[in-house]
Image 1 (cartoon, rainbow, N blue to C red):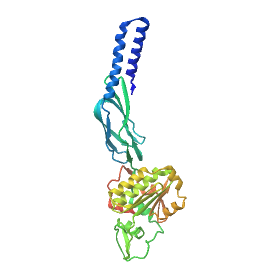
Image 2 (cartoon, helix red, strand yellow; image 1 turned 180 degrees about the vertical axis):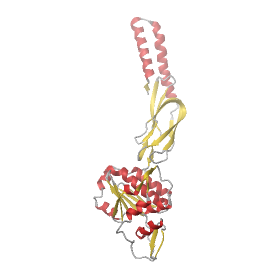
Image 3 (cartoon, one colour; image 1 turned 180 degrees about the horizontal axis):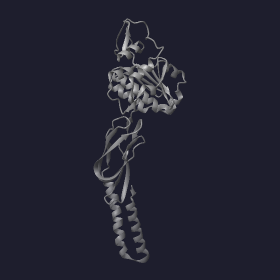
Length: 347
């Protein structure tokens, strides 16, 4: 409990009046000092008896850079209070500093600006007496996090197929008897790239052998300074694979998402990519350790590089990520044609 600026002014007036009365015998000044003292005591008593406020902030759904969300902060209690809350860097919006009568609900719009997982901490509630002479600051409300996913680029199917099925790639794997449409669980090595590009759909060379059902494994490796760019590339590959109904496994320098499919896996992958970037974990790996080398060898799609350029490696072929993406950037994975999704699956 502390004096407000108004309370400090009242104390100053009371002290001045008391000194004037003591030194100069102006008893009438007691009529100034006494009410001031009474007001201060009344304020302290009222604040002591006041109901302690409580705060509940609404959950903020994760999203992509550029998207907006509404947040509601509900403050219960009685009396007058000033509600203060500051937003973390990476999320734009109005910082709260409002004096209100309790109970109340405060709404504001949040704008996601940068990839990351940001804490929305406790709210400061400065409760004061009705005259505004004394106040107390309370840190209230449970802390929560809000995730901002990486941007997602639409990948150009022609560039994906053309870049990853260039001269010298040849037919996949062993000899085959016929071509058929790609099905869930087909191994990447059996995609017939030339025919897929010609007929604008993903075709598989079938020899009657049982195909593997392992998830498509994306591995991200590099320096912490490239975390943002690599997260963008990984999201741009992972989402269309999941939208096609396939399983995805993701390995990051500081996290790992086991293989699965569906909406829940989409959220797990995006959350891992939003949070990744721990400098110590990334720079400790950086493709140099034996463990990192083994993981890279197991990757179906390897993403590596630095802040200047991200490279995609498939079947020992390296292609700059910039060559595989179209010019537009989506806030999230918008509608894609079957061709786009299929082509990206094995890009």
